[in-house]
Structure formats: structure tokens, C-alpha cells
Length: 85
Image (cartoon, rainbow, N blue to C red):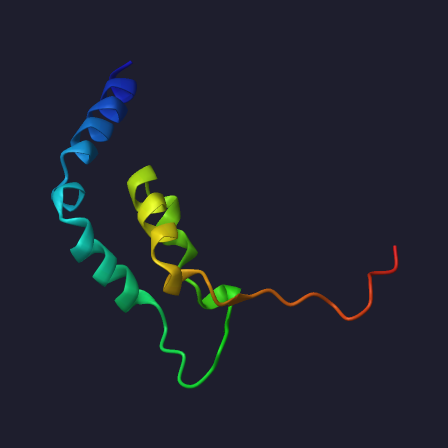
């Protein structure tokens, strides 16, 4: 019971964390800075995209998809021939 209450308290504390009160424009700039520089490339691989950003909370997910440079150039490579099962 005590550990359950601790878990609830941690969740409540997270709601009041200062990062949740930052202006979205500042958080967006931090997200954009997190994207690797393309250095002349037109696409980046899926492993280079900061996908973990959108998994933090619903507001970060919404912001992530509102910033096209974070996701618009993801390249997903498929094998040239289908697997032989």
C-alpha cells in the first residue's frame, strides 16, 4: 500500500514539474536543436530521429508532430526482396 501511495505521489509531482510550464516555443526550440544536422542529406534514418520525445507525455507528443523537421524526412528502408518464410 505504501509503495502504491508513493507511486501516486511521484505522478502528482511530475504534473507540477517546471518543464510542463515552459512556453511551447522554447520547448520546440529544444526539440529542433535535438535533431541531428542533415549536412546536405535530404533524409535521415529512423534511428536518428528523436522518437523518444513524443513518448514522454501527451503535450510533448502534440508538439512533436507540430514540428515537421522532427519527423518529415524519416527514411524507412525495406529489404529489396521479400523474406522467404
